[in-house]
Amino acid sequence: MSTPPRIVPLHLADVTFPDGHPQAGLTGPVLGFAVQHDEGVLLFDTGVGTGHPEIERYYRPRVTPLEDALRANGMTMADVTAIANSHLHFDHCGSNTLFAGLPAYVQAAELRAAREPDHTVPEWVGFDVLRFAELEGDAESEIAPDVVAIATPGHTRGHQSLVVDTAEGPVVLAGQAVYTAAEWHGSTAPADSGVNGARDVLAYSESVHRLRRIGPVRVHFAHDLQAWSRTA
Image 1 (cartoon, rainbow, N blue to C red):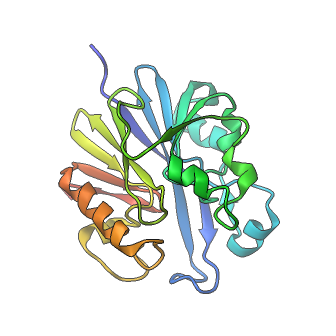
Image 2: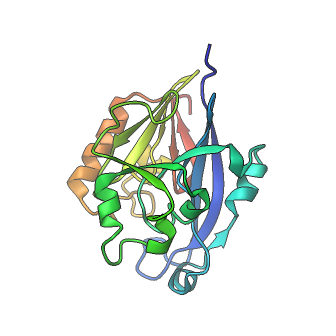
Image 3: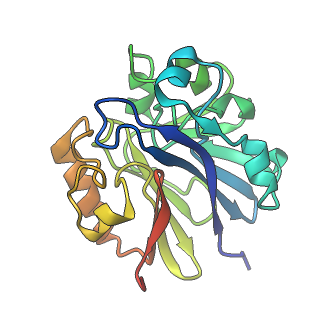
């Protein structure tokens, strides 16, 4: 009998928001998530990379290496059997290339967007080193035991979230489909909500409603250390 997956949040970086951002001058977290299952670890998002002058200048990231984040939670890089990216902005794919040869689940629309100017840091995506499994909308099968990927466009055209069937019930790894726990609670304040930064506001709203309809027992966010819980 299989063991239900376990979700481990990984605090991979903190960035300082640049001028023009609703939280300009403040800092915010960047999270990835390790989903431990019977066959290994699925890593959802890989944080911020290092050594890019523009990113360093504008965001001043303080990065925790993935290896260290995993080790702090009793895992190693060798435990990772696949990765998935919510989307391919610089703060979600920064360490992709550390997983050369592994499957990487991403929306096909997002992979196309990543080849366009100003979408991301192309050298961090891992175009030539990962085995990309390009999804067209929802995955037709599990991408890991008890884990499915669903399309949640809005923040970017190819954003996706994960739904994990845990012992407690369905848990959503929202990525940036929802910005914060406060937004999930209903806040529309610019510091809490991702609406203003969404590429497609209507699609963003529809994706939020879709995640709500799942009826999750818990929701994790890529930029909020606080998770939402049904009992909270």
